[in-house]
Length: 327
Image (cartoon, rainbow, N blue to C red; front, side):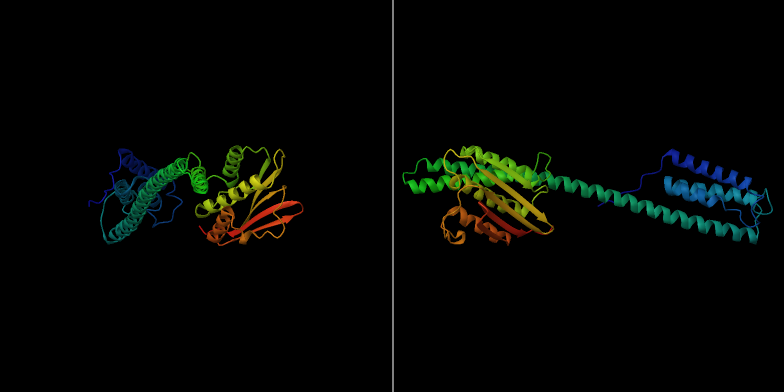
């Protein structure tokens, strides 16, 4: 596996090195009378740092070389010469050491930043690929569920036993409902849909399929549901909603159904209430043999929550409480 090499700096980098060294020389010359003896390199170090940071190691070395020569010739005694003695050697050695350390660390920082940038881009590409794969898998699962539901309904048409035919129709309908939930959990861009948005769409479809004209209102639920909890929570909502449409209202009457999701920290409460006829006296939801209520209780157990049904101030209130999954 070959290692990625740092691309050579463009011509502008070397032009910056020359310009920075020239600017540092001019500033040093203008301030010469203000500086005490012994500071020949003071204005050149910033020029080296700036060049190495913006243009890289090569231009930084060029800027350091030009700066060293200018300081040696003009600002180290004897002036205007390249005379070399012990004091000059010490001054030049100090300059080379400091310039080399600056360039070394700045070049290392630039390499680390480039590596981090490449890693971020790689991670972003992996995230995009993962999201695309997830949406494709999500779409295919929904389609497959829809097909299974349709096959069950088709199979029911050939059944002579009325109970078996009804069971297949209900099973197909529930599978198609799960497929519909899966499709509506995310919008066209793949972003999670708020509970309120897809709940309104699902309840509208369910009401039209039932032929009901009752007033339905959704409250709260501005945030998306947790992916692992969305399907059981929505199934509970639809089972209670369909139960209200089927049993709460007599023919020809218009009623009201309110669905609300309260989100307070990690605790969530889903309520479905209707102003229709309540359950019969002594009715115990947990002991009912109704398939719909058995599904509701199973979903509540899957969520680690609790489901209750009670008559409150003329309303039948179905209540699911659970704790939001972490993540």
